[in-house]
Image (cartoon, rainbow, N blue to C red; front, side):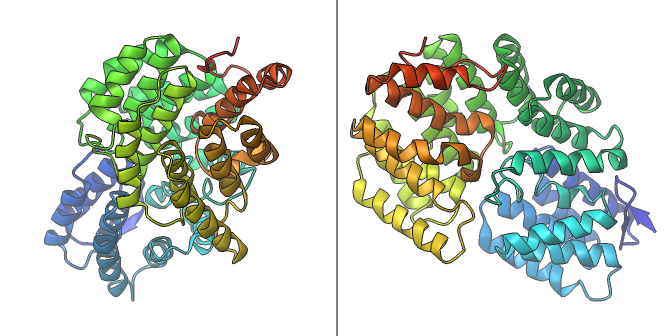
Length: 431
């Protein structure tokens, strides 16, 4: 029997199909383009290779092509009867995931990995800040992610993909030295791994290593195609480094050239998060409000995310709606989130609706109301979904609100409690 790169048996007798499948998985795991084409090569060589259809479905889902993903998943499911247990379980898991059954998918993931820990395509759905664990609505999700990765580490050894993601989980939990050793090991084995470059960005942010983060991303990004699924997001990381370093011109140039929705080639949800959060941080740092930029952002939200349902998208959409002054759209989104939460379909619960109202109050310059909305849910910010670097936007908004409201003692108290090592605070008025 043929096996994949992790030694797991795959149900095909075609070496060409197996080789293309490994290539497709590696392209997906390293966030390089071409994975769909590789899976199509698999299917041409062996039309009965069910895992290739599941892999293709996952890539299409991440690209935002949900109808195509569902069609690919249906093809995989049709081929599932009679498959060995591991492949049958793999397809059943992705069927739950693409069917929007997040809780059931997370339970299935844990069960699957307890038997086949080296199924990296399954693990990859939870190995990032916005994966199944990150979006679970649990306040302790970063700790849970690290526990999962720690437990699986012996099965993966020095594998470049796993060690890069393990390093990310370590960095998010404050274990910077161990994370650095692992990401160095990962990038030595595969310097073209975009997720590894992503981990370097987060680690440098968490460890306060601004200069290395800037120099690394400045040198690495030119080696990565703009069609890569993390190009815009990595450019966002570099823009944050530039903003913190005081090079506002370089930061905004990155926004205009790469991050803005009219030029960004990342999946829509990533484009939304990166563009909206950069513009918001830009203003927190003391730079002027740009109505035309926010209007373009708002139009993107109305086109791509007209309804509530995904907490990560919703809190970034709320930024755009608040900054564009569309209080009606924001209030409608809040009511939709609250209705979903009441019916048990919104894992983030009341956190994102409260933040959305806080963002709106902040834009109205009603800073006391912004503080009253944000402060009660601040300790539950993990539930909003996103990395520490991303959710820092909430902390920075609250700090600026304290300053504008004249509550400088509250501002200083909050700054004194900031997590150790993290990057500086590019907020006008914070000393």
